[in-house]
Length: 429
Ligand SMILES: Cc1cc2nc3c(=O)[nH]c(=O)nc-3n(C[C@H](O)[C@H](O)[C@H](O)COP(=O)(O)O)c2cc1C
Image (tube, rainbow, N blue to C red; front, side, top):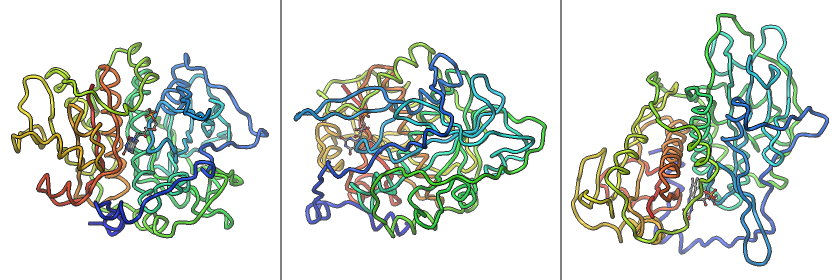
């Protein structure tokens, strides 16, 4: 087991001996804005290529809290609504964008032109492509202090899960074009971090690239690695270094023995309803103990088990506790097979750090595990699976919540399998 994962486990005792008191007035900024000297273009969600970005990461609601405070929530979920990830993309040969490299400014829904592509240059070589790619190439970064401010050392897990959710959001938004998506983990992190100004001495490590995605098709023209110099734009306002997370990032930045997945995913959604369900998606704060149908179960499992095309497809195992699915035996399932037939609803809620309104009251509780090697790739894959679950349940009008807080070792003991517990999710009504 990777040492960072081991060091950041939750247990019944750790959460009690180390309670987290938050002063929300001190929360770091969740927005990154480049200076207005850059050209900024508002995205038109009716333009299919703009839509890929809009339906991946835009603001979709304003949530009010007691005492008159409010926060803006986005189409993509994020642990604690801290949104540690930033989205960059290269557009080439697509309607609505000049060929160039952009940052998505979430706060204003604008694409910020960082660099105009000239001649045969492009970002492709940093992502492992030899020829030019027509379409959108994405890069996902993490401004880690946004998350470590609350989740401390465990936050690298959340940065990766949330990045996986962004990748999964790209996958679903691209269905609206329609276009398939392929994930890229073997990106030249060091060179890209430098290129985008993330490694300036004064700010080094605050923002780092985690992955990429391609919503594009290869052309025949050769392409040369683009060079430019960007000043660092601050992404969190305040900052405190986290040595453990920075070390984990560095150690896991080079991939070992990667196995690509070339098979495309068959995800069936009707476009108008998909758009509506992306914008309407929310995390349900608790379930009322109502069942879902067997048809729902089948549709959901199909979406989760379709291949996820990528350059490094790590094995992630799916365990599910069925609490209430009509005409299905209750109990613990692994890859669709019933392992233990009993009522584990209390246990499932307990394992999710006693979030009983989710794990116990829900219809199904998922646990994702892995024994694979490429930590950044396997963790982001768990996030993509999580996003597929959010997407299909929102489409079917079923509630869903990601659960990043669970008792790691006790989940292992319950499912009787070793390995790293990556994520839990609950769905229901
Ligand atoms: C990786 C991840 C972990 C999460 N963990 C929890 C959790 O343990 N408990 C919970 O109630 N919600 C959890 N959530 C839900 C977030 O709090 C929620 O996505 C965020 O507040 C934004 O709200 P929205 O999903 O309705 O847009 C998690 C979400 C993600 C993506």
